[in-house]
Image (cartoon, rainbow, N blue to C red):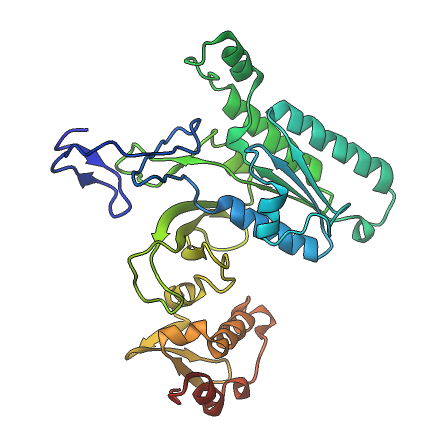
Length: 356
């Protein structure tokens, strides 16, 4: 890298390098050596993790709680019993409902899903669709699945040729077949993938690896980017890194408006907050409006509620977020909740300032 070079950073799509300084050797670790977009940092730590596996684990945990059968194909060897436990999935508790399968080849995962579908058809074909089991299949991740060509090249000691497009073709065929196979069944497929930096200055969004086939077939595609979380529980800026901030952007959706973006905060301690990003999302949708140094919400009953931004981390603030979701879910049957839930007396008790 030389002065004058343009690089993509977390602050801009094209930052110009003004100076290059040599420093003492730093201890670095790279956790995904097969990834096309290597990134290295000093101070003894480096990671590509944007939180995609963690969010996938949250989806699995909620599915299990609803009685849905979960089958996860782990291609990164990272979904250990301990890791899943830390993410809130008690593997022993859901024995028989949760199945983890370690795979390496895309051919193997295709065969496994094919066998699952054959078994479902044999057992439940004559059963009423409403009585059939609901299944969630998770692949973490597509980009780490090998083709037979890559394996043969590795065994021969020649890994410079790449898979010559076979991986992208296999991914496309895999996802297309899943769409067809799952059509009449209550089966969902959630797959994670890796991204790499765009080389197109006119289209700076990160690109999804493994070809566009899976994106075309997906009902929802979400892109995530990792940043450092340097905030305390009250939202105050601090110097220590307490976790990651994951910028999440819906790049495709068949169910809602695409290109919506939100930032999810994932602290190392405590994990993701289920309300993370909601305030910013409601601000963008003009549901929450700035009113001086507070945010104002006007309910469907016409009454206004005003809170300081930090108050949304409190119990009373979260009750308001629950109310907003209820009232604005489709304007979903325009569900109404009473403003009496949020009387000034309750807010004064919660915050001590009586602000409304």
